[in-house]
Amino acid sequence: MAQHALARGHVCPDCDGHASVAVTLGGRTPAGHLRTITAHCKACHGTGTRLARASAVTATR
Image (cartoon, rainbow, N blue to C red; front, side, top):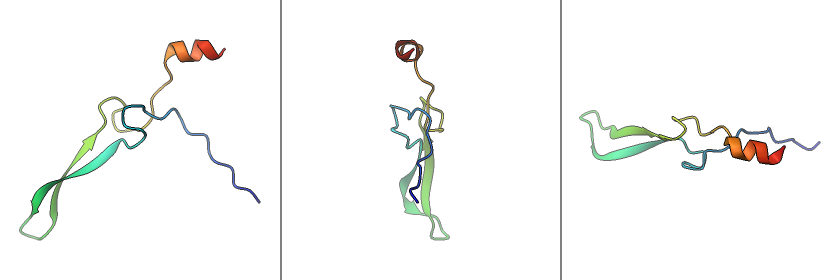
């Protein structure tokens, strides 16, 4: 049987759906772990999706 893809929301154009990333700061902690920070997309607040613009919604109706 064919698998149906689930309908996704509108992908954020700023982060292209990759809303959160781990950035390596360089070096390691005394325990040997990499030092990282998490950066979130400012446009979608880390969700990866955005609502459609009002002009885009009215143009399709």
